Length: 77
Image (cartoon, rainbow, N blue to C red; front, top):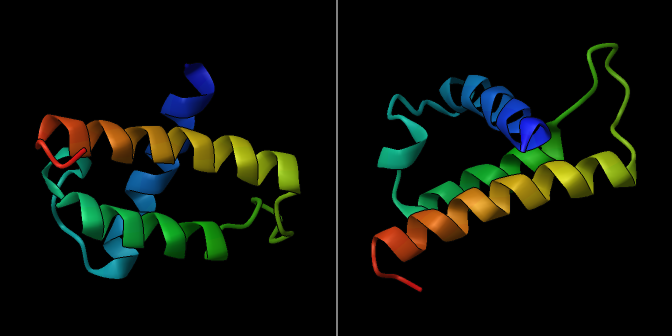
């Protein structure tokens, strides 16, 4: 859970780069999915190196969970 929260915080800092001003929970699920896709493609380590497969998988899993929860809460299963 701690890793997921950390990934969400990093993702929240990424959103303004896409011009998004809303909080994660206010973003429409389909648009949130699009942002997650852009994030996964562009994310880098602090030193500029690409993340490894395991790092990307754990990060994307946490963000996918967030997106799925958003959809459930908005009745979009």
